[in-house]
Image 1 (tube, rainbow, N blue to C red):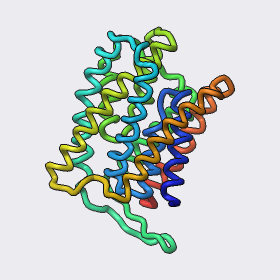
Image 2: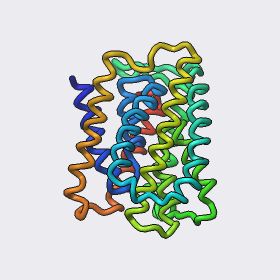
Image 3: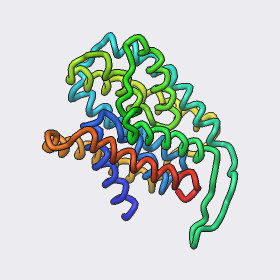
Length: 263
């Protein structure tokens, strides 16, 4: 019951944040799932919630998407998402690097936790440092942006921050930005979820999630929908700087906990 409450609350809050920032659900929800799932399973579970959330946003704002941007950015992102998801399956089989006791808890450090922690620290810097927070990219770099966003989306779920940084510089309207981001995010989610399924089957692993874990995924999904609807009511009261600062602080703390093997 506690696990369901924790996951659902985290999903509700982070889904609301994504309405303002264009990213954040996968970034912050994955570490919460990692409290209850192995890290590679946490990424897959987050992908399911993120995919349902993207589908919800796609249905709501997808009609505003810029089709040219979706193709130019989205196709490289989808291709790279397959590669990133496959890389996750490869790294997930590496053994532990260290184990130590921290009071009643045993902390285990693994390669995948270190990689995830490093990625989160990098993305935390993008939210906390003004020079990186304001970083924008020109339209001619869209293919590169798609490749980077797709790969990290497949590998760790971190796709939205890079996607927003590239798309916001293209000069499209707010509606087109939200619709385009939702469309690309949905396509990448579908690609990585399919790849996770193939990787687990190829490794002859049992179902990625068991009967006790599906309620957490369902609860997180429904909470994500609720978070978006609630956040709409307070859209005019929240600044992007507040969202970015909060996201960066949370990422930094979670990265330290993950890298040290505590979670």
